[in-house]
Length: 341
Image 1 (cartoon, rainbow, N blue to C red):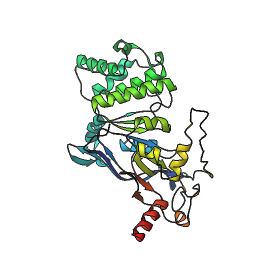
Image 2: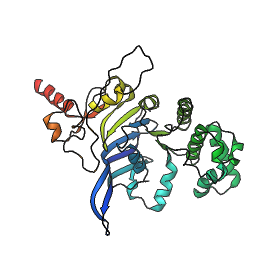
Image 3: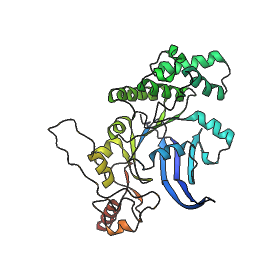
Image 4: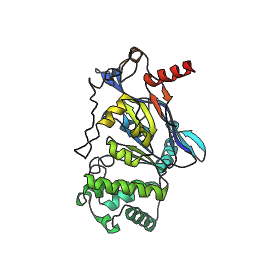
């Protein structure tokens, strides 16, 4: 649900999250795994922005870094507080504690997100205690409220996690994230561990809750059909970088980057009478430790040019409003158009 007035709630500038590789007794740093490598992105209040890419492209690390579960190597993560942007990478402990109320995360695995030794009541009560809700009746009223939002009976609070199905556990994880009334939910593969029928229930539930609470979603997934259903805008990542950003309709109707085209061609079609041309990418994904010069995708790209091997492409606007792509093909076309004019 994109708002008419586009108010930026998250502004991420040149974000890098590198993990050091150490060697020897003295832990000498000999390299870095560049999981997120120069990502810039504006997230608007009330929208769902999908983040897609192959396994290992950095999308989960990006989500964790956006809420400071991973410490960034460099860059800024600006969050809007009443019209004023504050860099959360510089927050002290008290400021970070308050920030946690505004941004919550739904993790990928509902089986490990809940403590198997504690009843649901204890798992739900603890965050409310930590965030200063001292009255037990108020805590119980809040717990019952969020459970009803995800269609789970309040008397289930006295059960253990193993007594629930996968879909119920994921709904419990969503409910727990909603307890502190956040503004943003970062959802890391929230339905990938669920059956298809259960996925639909959880996704529809998330849409309903978003409308009710005016939430902003960062929806990280590898299932392109799920992302299309959920998202207003979609970000395509490859090897720690953004290669394309577009409105969900524009991206699926007219993808620009060769990597995006290959991803979309891999979506299966249910109708056996429709033959879909599959674009197979040759070569292997480069190591995030030793990235190739120039465009990170050039060794697998069917349209690779000489400039792709030496110069990294900039993000440029192309086609529909808000459609951006990092590819020399489109930069060259724009330049040629200007010359002809």
